[in-house]
Image (cartoon, rainbow, N blue to C red; front, side, top):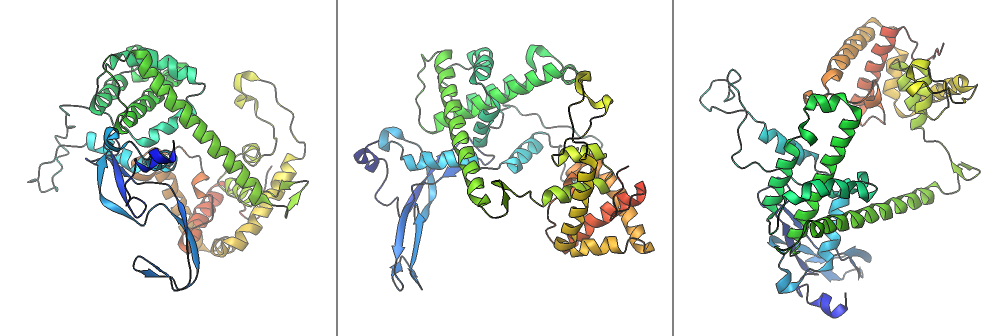
Length: 433
């Protein structure tokens, strides 16, 4: 884009009081999500120089796209003023940076809510005659981060294959509401009208259905964003035209993710530096050894712990997929694992002194009673997970990482100690027999 054209896609005030563009298709809010410009420029100020109502108390240099955002957002009107590339940059950043599980949770909770009767003494929820509220005009939710599904739709031929079957049901001209209805209707039923139990019982059918759901979800997000950003889709557009738009977004987002991943790899190498390396290889993170310690205390099998921290260990015959032969493994894997767990104990004593104190007092009756009660509670809660969501983590995986505070240090240690008591393990002297 030439400099002259760029000047006509923004107002003179945008660098100072940026306007906001509304993407009405996305988010659970009635109005959608708002996007500001992203076109950072450098600003340099001397000590005592003023910027707006601010006086710098020392020299400073910083990078900004605007001073303040305007309070109201407008929809894209490409015919009037085109679209400032700074908004496109923010949209792409939002695709990669957004985290929208809370919105997803609220959306599905609202669509499976119970009928509320305000005069009931129970607070309005009649559990005796509960039923879900029927939506007269059901529409699916679409999120801007759904475009990240491109990463799981490789190669693009798999996406194209799914679109051939589903896109003909969506006929131009259409609104974003039409797209949301199309997504809801398409994903309401399984492929070939299979039942949920049938899909769950056949691994290949389950994977096929997951791929289809990803493809339709991605396609809906791509079409909604295209409409929100002012792309005109004529009535005479064919199925191939729509597929081309969707595949274009797939290529663009895939390339964007790849570029970011490449930058992440470069950053990791930069941060590794030269210190603490052997032959150019960074030293192992301490989390590796702490993980071995926690998994040992939570009763995980030795060979499983070894593989989790990167040691080659034997795989029991009953766990070998398809009866494949045992791969070669390090004969000293158990000795290396023992040393890793001992290193984990040293790390715990350094980083979590209150946790170390719990294990030092492991023979005290009060501590043992608390540990057993905490572990029983952990096991009960583990079955359903937080907020009655079935947990997918295996024993101990949610106990990893540096405790955020002293209370968490003690809580995690108490649970581990309870597991050791139940299993007859010494938490400070591993036995890998």
